[in-house]
Length: 283
Image (cartoon, rainbow, N blue to C red):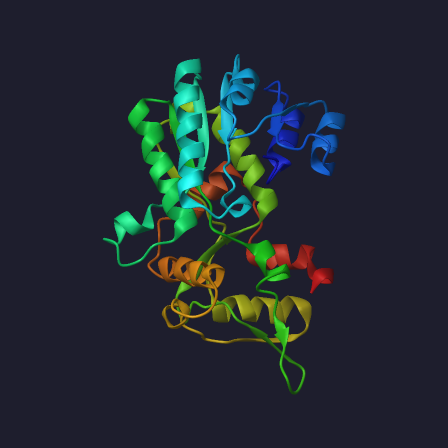
């Protein structure tokens, strides 16, 4: 898909690669923008192997993203990922970069599961098992979530805003969506250094209180942390809410995200204060 479509544009600007952007919907806005920049936009479906084979034949390197939110099925995402791994093995690609995550259920011995993490973890392992030369990136919490689902909400009384990030006193790794693209380009240009590696990305590790303090300082609004614990919300609400709560419960266990390596791969990656300055008007 074209989710996080900045990386094909950056590949085009870099000039190293001839870029094919693969999407289910080649007439969507992002696809049209990539066409204008010189990419070949190709229609294919991750559930349709013939379309994938037609699209990927002749490719040298690939960045693979599966979209759990499209169907919310762990089994389907695993099937899509394994289908791609088997195909890419047959096509003998030189380097595959996969957007993966941890298999939380396996790591935690079954007491905690995060479906959209677990499925990607299974696929990560499968890519290695079948012998595709693969690097994996594991993304952190996106700063953009502070503009939508975790946007600070006005308190019932007074001028205070409440940030309800269910992390208690634990820190959460974060990163801006736009800063993933340069990392992808850097990794695709240096496969010999990163094949076989799993790279956890982060532009900074902040607690909920620190996120709130930065928002207060940069926006001029009084933003306070809710101090809600992730564990207290894992059994409440809809399946989507439980999934989100389980994710934060895993984040509280401090999964491996490497700020120094991320900044090496993209020296211009925004820190959270820098990102808030750039997006101040949206708050």
